[in-house]
Amino acid sequence: MIASLLGLILSSAILSTLYAAIAANKLKIAAESIHENSSLAMYFLAMDLRAIDFSGCLEAGISSANIVSTGSIADHLQRYGVIFAEHKQYKNSDAFSFVSVLDAGSELNQSMSSVHSSVDLLADSAVANTREVLITNCQVADLFAVSGQWNSQLYHDVPDNSSANLSAAYARGSMLYPLSVVSYKISRGASGRAGLYRKVNSHYFQELIPNVEQLRIFYASKQGLDNKIIYRSSSQINDYAGVTSIHLQLLLSSPTQVLMHKSYYQNLQGQLVKAADRRLYKSFEITVALRNRQLSRE
Image (cartoon, rainbow, N blue to C red):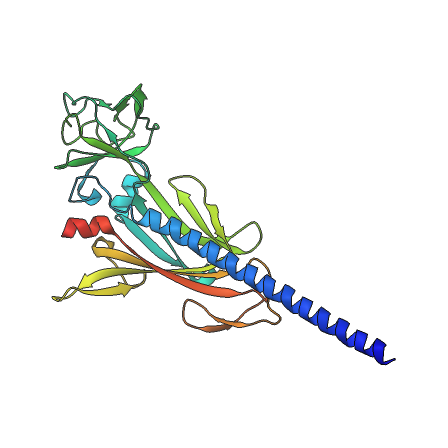
């Protein structure tokens, strides 16, 4: 009788230890998943953001370029500037888009004979039709849409451009950079849960990182005679031209429910919220310096 009782107690202790170990392992895996997803999200965001206002050797930046393109990138620059942001009701999160250089530049192989001549690149360069590009010789720049191409020669005719003439006849050695509009937002994924979504140009939004619950964005600019750095949200800032760095906050959740009970967590508005499930929640932050803008102001 005593032996049987001791056996039951021992079995119960072993099972309790086993269940505790399983629960601890699930919690560990959930925490690792959150950290991995946050690292990936921060990597992609930082990589795209650091290319904002890249314009090669043109110190004045993309905003100083002569725009002849009638495409979406030209429209973004003329309507909003390089950066556009807005606050969304879904998940009380921010969304933003910006003009960036995601691809390597190409060098002009031959000098243009006139401002309406084709742009002759090196033989191994390839730029798709209707792609909007920035061409610069370090002094001036033009933003045009590729209306057609033959081998390595690019054309910039109407109606893809408002004029077939560029502001300069660019010499051999000038650089050409394909431009992109990159957009980020929080949206509901196929699993029914929120995720971080990314879009390039006119392509559809695609889920980049799952289980991202919130995204908040703050923009830093210098203010006053002492050039004090002040961070503002999209609802507090009107001029993005002076933004020199961007502060990002992300709230992520675990892919599965791992806690014994529903817990409380702090959302990105600083509010203490009771979770609707037993998932683990954790927030992360990163500040990305817009180095191209800082260099142009030094």
